[in-house]
Length: 542
Ligand code: VG1
Ligand code: CO
Image (tube, rainbow, N blue to C red):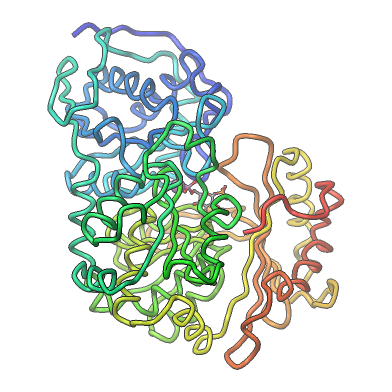
C-alpha cells in the first residue's frame, strides 16, 4: 500500500453544529475540504486498528466522499470499515450496526432533512461506540484537531466499488459491504408484534408511508409491504435518489404536504407517515388528524407497555427543551423520571446508556428509544401501528382519549429562515440581556412568570452546556422558547416554539394557531421579532 501525505491547513467553519458538520455541496466538495475534516475526526479518535461503520442517505456527493474517506481511513490504520451496500444506511440502522458489531464508531454521510443534489447540502457526522452522535467532549476534540491540522494521508490506490455485499481490501484495511436493511429489520422484529400488525392490515387497515425519495424507501418497503403485508404502493417515493426527487425531505405539514393533504380527506387511509433524508425523523397522521411530534412522544410513553419490547414499562422519558411538556405529564402519572435536555440527539446518549430513560423525543419529528442511540423514524411508525393493533381504535380516537386524560398541549414551531446572522445574534443577545427584568412584566394579554437562558447539566457525567436557548413562561400555562438553528447552511434561522396547555375538560378542538395567539403576540413583543428580522410572519409553521 502506498500512502501519500497531502499538506493542508485549518479551514474556517469546520465546526459541527446540532448534528455533525453541514455545508453546501459546493463547500464540502472543494478540494481538500472533506479530506481535512475527515483527518481531523480520525486525529481526535484512535484510528489504529479501529472498526468503523460507514453509511449515508444516498444524497449527491455520498459516493465520491465515501471513496475518499475509505482511502484516508486505510492510510490511518483503520482495520475494518463496515459499509452499507451502495453506501446506504439510514441513521438508525447505522447506530444499530455500530452497537451490534461492537464497532469503535461510525461515519454518517447525511445532511438529514436538508435538500440534496449538486446545489443542495451535504453533511458528515461522527458517532461513538454506543451508536450515538459524538457528545460535546468529542466534537470539541474534533474542533481542536481541525484547528491545528497540517496534513492528511490517503492511499494512492482507489477504493473498491460498494455495490456488492462482499469483503475486499484497501491496503491492509478490510472493507465489508453489508445489506443495509437486514439487521435493522431483525431488530424491529424483536421489538414489535409483527403478527398482530399483519392481522390488522389483513383485516383492512390501510396505510400510506412517504419515503420522500430518501433512505427509508428500502426499509419501509421491506417492513410494511413485504413483512406486514400492506399492498404494493402503500410505500410511495420509495427509491432513494441523489436529490430526493428535487424535494425537501423533511416530514412535516409543509414539506410533506401531499401526504398531509391526503390524510385530511374523508377517504384517507387509516394511517399516514413520512420520514426524512436519513430516516431518523417521522411524521404521524391519522384520517383527519396530524399528530404533533410532542404529542406523539407523550402517547408512545403512555402506551409503550402494550408493545412487546417495552412490556415491562419504561424507566423514564427525556425530551428536548423546546418539545412540549406533554410527555412530562405522562412521566409524572407513570411515576418515572422526566428530563429536559438541549436540542440534539447527542444529549440523550448518557441518559439512555445509564438506563435512566427508555424513550426520548424532540419536537422536530424525532422519536426514539434505547434500542439504538439515534432517533428512528420507522421505529416510531411501528410503535404507532403496534399500539393501534392492540388498542383497536383510530389514530384520532387515541389522540382525543389522551387529551381527555392528560389535557392538550397546543404546540407549534415558527421558523424565520434565511435571516442575517448578525440580526439573529442581536435579537438573541438583547433578549438574554433582558431576561432578569422580564418576570412580572406584562406582554400583550399575558404576564411573564419566568425567563431563563437554558443551561443543562448532564445528570450522568455532570458536563455543562450553556446558552441552549431562551425559555419564557407565562401565566395560564403558556410557554415560548427561542433559539437559533444549528443545522442550516444559509444565514441564520430563528426558531420560535410556542405552547399553551389546555387541561382536561377544557376545549381541545380549537385551531392550533388560534389557541396560541396570545403567546405568539407576547413572544413577538418581548423578542422584537419584527424589528430584528424584518418579518411579520414566519416562513415555515410546523
Ligand atoms: C434540528 C432540530 C433538532 C434535531 C436536529 C437534527 O436542529 O431542531 O431537534 O436534533 O435538527 O436532526 P436545529 O439546530 O436546526 O434546530 V436531523 O433529522 O437533521 O439529523
Ligand atoms: Co434526520
